[in-house]
Length: 355
Image 1 (tube, rainbow, N blue to C red):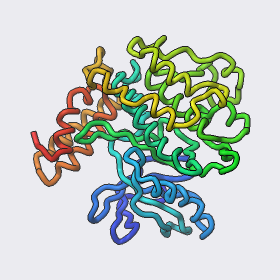
Image 2 (spheres, rainbow, N blue to C red):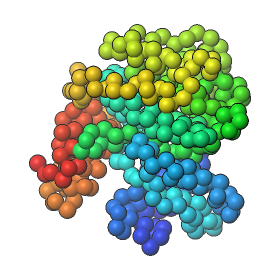
Image 3 (cartoon, helix red, strand yellow):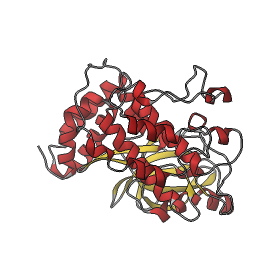
Image 4 (tube, rainbow, N blue to C red):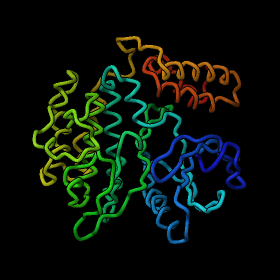
């Protein structure tokens, strides 16, 4: 059951609109700011003490030190009263396009178009590199499809890393931190309890890149990924180009370098990975294009069509164009067909141009 209901007034300037999602430790809401329109608010499930709140809001402090375009912006942080308890929260920018998982699902019959996949990989890496450049480096420790957010702006796609809830500065002597994260994206050495370094973040990023390029997990051996099974890592993954003819050997090398099972042989940090990826998307054809198939009218496609219709209705009113753009962004994140049809329109709306 959600901690906060629709219409709950959190502060003098924030009112809850709806629950966006939840994880093991927190719930995320869309909230309306009196002056700044929509924001996302993360409310921790754990009842807050002063010490506990300081620990939980460490994520907010880490985020606020980076100020990078590919990391979600933080607006405010504090504590709030909920029925029977006090909890920590922070507010951040709201991304209507949702998570990277939504983009992958929209292309469930094929892999994500190469240009889009490479843009996502480059921008994820740039955001993570900003964290790894800190001294000592800031580790994300929980990079997954669910906490990479994809938005669409007047200049095109923009990716942001979110959910630094497990972030921790590495030990300045060993450059290691305690092992946490989501199993399917967790490096072998982390699963063995050997500690977490920047190479662990690189592994997670490499796993996401492989999924984007192929539609497959690099070490999928047919067993559930939550089962502790180290045998799956004895054989290196096949090159992404084996599943996607559009991937070249250079991109193969970059991705496989991020997935070396020995951390000493893996690309050491996101800074190094970013240099290897620099400018690759500019050598690729433009995206989006209409997919070669017409997807069945499942719940996602129907929802996307409904959002497009609502967006068109709102766009008739100049003062509602921003809200219309948010609805259209959500639609194109759900459907490859709607993305191909409406990306140019979305870019114009983000510029304030009606059509």
